[in-house]
Length: 491
Image 1 (cartoon, rainbow, N blue to C red):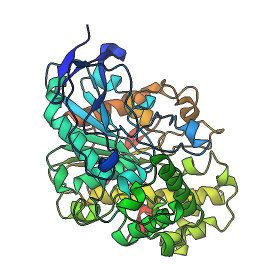
Image 2 (image 1 turned 90 degrees about the horizontal axis):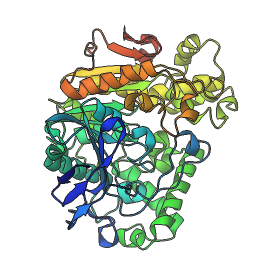
Image 3 (image 1 turned 60 degrees about the vertical axis):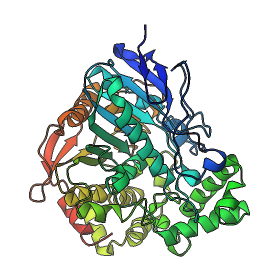
Image 4 (image 1 turned 30 degrees about the vertical axis):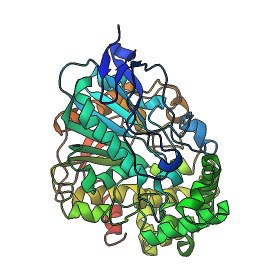
């Protein structure tokens, strides 16, 4: 007999999960954002009578699939719908006070869901952690900056999910005073925003940010440019009334068009910060929901008292260049153009050429983009944080695409979850990814959720201790300092 738990909304029955654990699917944490609630802050979910079954996943937020081949490479096959503010809980049992991990999925703020197979939480539950995944509004519905309504609705959805965790997780065997947020890519960037938000204070106590940090947000002028262009594409007024009149599926197609446009013509005059971030839908520093720039907030002590784990993969940007074949098509001028876009002096390219003596133009451009977009922001967040901080780098190179995919963006996620054999990971990881490495990463994240110590020295400016995960994992002090120092004083 599967356990039944009474939540603030009603009773819910578990279904069996792997390793003898229990899974509660599709629990609403807020009301469906439809009709007048579509562009409103999240509202309380309606209570239900009887016992709610957990035999099916809830809908993910409306979204268009990734363009091939990323759609199959990342296993992003999501059943979507507007009734998307739901969450899932894995637990070894409903007694006790176990540490809690809450996963914020990535997907460039336009894609993803908490129900993907690689996010299965049974291994964490097996190892004494209560695991929560959830969905939140994406794209225009979640992050379009619309005058006349609240900003950053997707972030407010995340706050609502965390509030549900605080109020209910003890009934699932979790400790509401030991909640760790962890997320990857846009999910990690969202966590950095939550670290800066008064509304999220006290809802989590540790944060693990994977391949995303605190330097990817929009200012209101840039967000206004995005709104203006989306309204042009839709043929409506740039207002709540105008966008609300358009069906969600039409808006989803239009927002994908904007992503294509900004990638093809990243003109700052047309897109503002989105021209560099390559994401037209992002959190906006609106002065209210997100009061100030997240990195500045962290520097000012907003994250004091939160244990921090932050890091990247070694070759993040190869995910966006290798599967499409672009890495072999970039011209010789690509590294110089990339460096110029990111404000890096041209003479700095000599250091990248020395680090990659056999690298092609595509390899060099990918390395520069990896550092600007991921590695340097992670280090700056660790340096700015006033408290316990640990840094890692994941360097295991996937054998996919004849070994050229490398230690790319998203490759570490199944290792953290210990889901190497789950559907959808073979194209990303190859046929025989190393289980011992998954054991190592999974153990580190479990330890961090338990007591804030993942198992290696804290990151300090003098030593810059970094756990480098690979076939042989070991701590290195200040990996590749000659490249890191190039970015001093550069955004």
